[in-house]
Amino acid sequence: MTLGERLFQYRNSINLSQEKLAEKIGVTRQTISKWETDQSTPDFDKIEPLCKVFGITTDELIKGDKTSNKEEIKQDQDNYNEKRNKKKAIILSISIFLYCIATFSLPYMVEVLNYEDAHAVMIWAGLCTVATVMLVFFFVAYPKKKDINTQSDIKEKIEEIKQIQEEVNQIEKNNKEVDTKNKTEDLVIEACAIFFLIIYLSVSFLTMAWHITWIIWLVFALVQLIIKLIFSMKGENNEK
Image 1 (cartoon, rainbow, N blue to C red):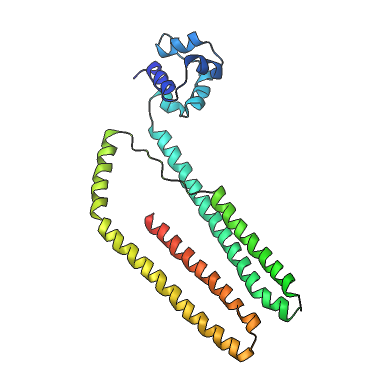
Image 2: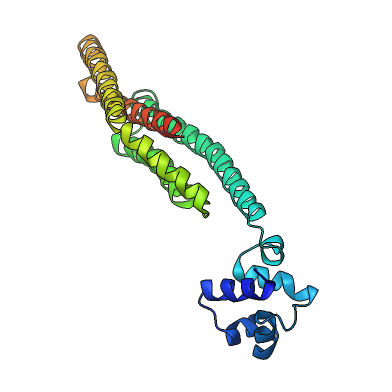
């Protein structure tokens, strides 16, 4: 395939007319026509603008080599995922810390600092809100990107078909693993619920501070959330 044929193909792939491409590059429509019919070739200073318009590399435009572009895309995706995982760990750690501080500071503010219940609850709600906003912001600002499909030639498509066939054979096995994971998660949560019930009843009867000991169930809700996050992260790692 000649350079002109590649220019024609890339221009059509983004539904761009010769006039629009000429405006973006800063040349005339006749120049674009001559490039596509191989009557002339683009000047060196026009190669980079063309690549930016088409979203390709110079090697892909000049040589028709897509390998470097695939490698760059994969590298960018790996870098994004690495940065996302680091930020995810930081945000989760800070959010869990804020939830813990909010939960354990509420009875302290009421019993020791003699805060009014309304003021203490406002502070507790504020800390929980900050932690929740951080979590929501992270998952909105840094969504998990799907793997970029780089299988564009016939050989790769044949391999993909073979992989699909193998995946079909593994469906039943995967379903069993999912059921096992869900059962394990439920058992852990049930065990924690029994444990917190024992603590709640023991502390309540010993201190008779029923108006405060309900905080224990807020801690249980936090622990339950952490358990679900752990199993969810574990599931994501297994999928990778």
